[in-house]
Image (cartoon, rainbow, N blue to C red; front, side, top):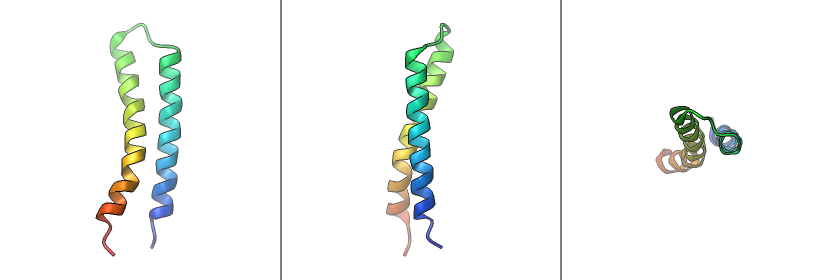
Length: 63
């Protein structure tokens, strides 16, 4: 079973949602510093994982 389309689709979803969350966090930051940092880290991790997942799948896939 070829899982590449599923990985690419989920990665695209992670990137889009991460960017939307990042825009939301930056446009209306929280007054609490820890909440702001948590939201910022969560959105950045979503984007990074969305980019890295297809690369890792391609690299470690056994054919």
